[in-house]
Image 1 (cartoon, rainbow over the protein chains, first blue to last red):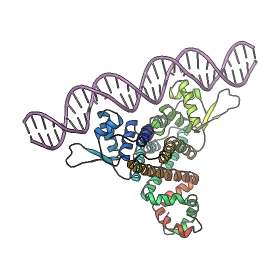
Image 2 (image 1 turned 90 degrees about the vertical axis):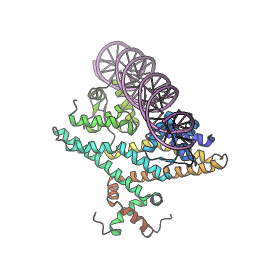
Image 3 (image 1 turned 135 degrees about the vertical axis):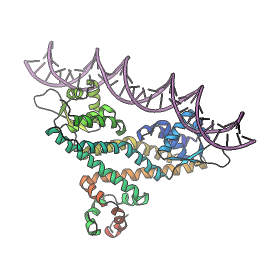
Image 4 (image 1 turned 90 degrees about the horizontal axis):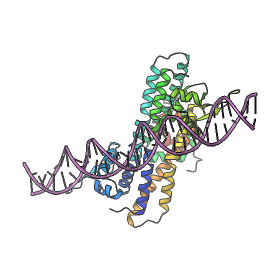
Length: 183
Length: 183
DNA sequence: CTAAACTTTCAGAAATTACTGAAAGTTTAG
DNA sequence: CTAAACTTTCAGTAATTTCTGAAAGTTTAG
């Protein structure tokens, strides 16, 4: 399994971007390789292609499985396991979003809720709690909305995007459109 | 400047979350402190409150300014500089999004465009380029849409959120609503 | 101008994170 | 059952990132 220059460039780039996307270099490279290579790959092939140790490969694959970005694929008659992407690009992107939400937003929302329950210690703390509340609500809006986008699916997202600034106008009309809605 | 237990908890948490949000612990702590503390703070006060070196504080402040999350605030009659948040929570959140887009998405989009221009090296590369194209388009949709959300502002985002699943329905009606739109 | 008050820079130290490879573990063929 | 083929784990090492504090730089008062 030798990577073409095209694949090599992409894999290297996804490696460099890896840490920005929530995983490390190796994990990024492995993901790119599996996604771009249509045939299922064995752990050994991956280690060879990327020139990394077999141990590191094992850890990377485990991580990618925990993110639900790849899954095992059993080839009849073969002893070793092979790996393939866990879905379409859209599915993978959603999984990354989802996982990052869990790591980057949820713990903060949870803490903010707790701190808002605490009895404030003086004047200043009341102002602080108001701020924390503001942050909490913002995060809530954003996550709720990104959930919504995920439910829409890729085609509708595309329609929505093409609509562009029209969204603002539509919002102003929404009451006429959906009078039955309770909010 | 002694932090109340409430502020301390929040600051510590934002520190821990810092690296997940694209900056390091200290930078996260400094940001939280400045945002939660209504009065402008001097670099020395920040260093003292967080028990970090003056040098580290200076670097952190510089970083936050480059993200446009804080700005200097001159107090007449005072020699030293003070720091305040660069805007409302909404503004700050947008800046973080924006900056992360620049770091996490833009370089990838750019590389993908380049790789799509390359002349493919055999059958397989053609399939690979198709995949890369798919990834590119998805990223494009997502970023274009998040831009849109930013332009809407917080109130409209709220309306949109409350609309929830209604968005799907509205989309189906959009042609009746906006017949003049060319797309 | 000089001195004081302040800020920034940056080399090295400390802390954190990632990687290797050998050893231990697991599965299946026979 | 045993041996071969494979995978995982993890202690130690390497690489990277963050932090300190001393030295150099800047600004302003007088």
